[in-house]
Amino acid sequence: MVVAATHRSCHVLGPGNRYALWVQGCPFRCPGCVSPQWLAFTGGKRLAVDDLVLDIVSFAVDGLTVSGGEPFAQAAGLVALVRQIRQSRDLSLCCYTGYTLEALRRGSPAQRELLGLVDLLVDGPYVRSRHAPLRWRASTNQRLHVLTDRHLDVLTEPDDPAGLQIEIGPDGEAQWLGVPHTPGFREALAAAADLVESRDA
Image (cartoon, one colour):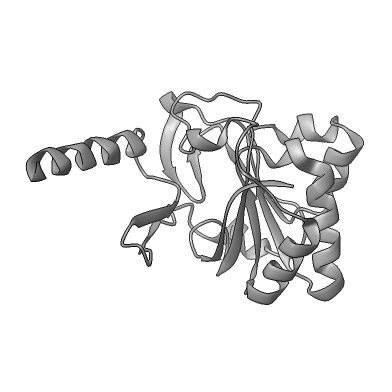
């Protein structure tokens, strides 16, 4: 699989404490995409499914969340990944996609097989003009589908944003995870960083 990034303990992309996996490459080009660096199908790291399985099985707490990029562009690899994981641990799967649920049900065999493994699906492209503070998603056209009995409680909980998870890495660099409440969050951060650098110069 071609992987953009991983995080072993994410609290803002699905219920509980989840292992997060972002794949590289996306056929959609949503204006205002929160992860433009992961759109190109070039880049990322090629990782063996077996190695990813070992890491996820070792460190995941409540489940696995897959985003990107576009997970369903690497459906076959993800099917192999999830099936191997579930041989060791019955982890839930939350998946983000720019496709709609209806389109995936008419998709390729691998896409339909992956869909059958998903417990929670956030579907639909990001639409900047419809940005809203919603739970685990960014625009009002995006829907949260509970596809199994595993997370039925989600249907009765408030549709409030989960917030951002902000961390300082060992190199002193800040990183954030989650769905920003406001559009243009990445651009605002870049502008703020430029302002700090100009003041320090």
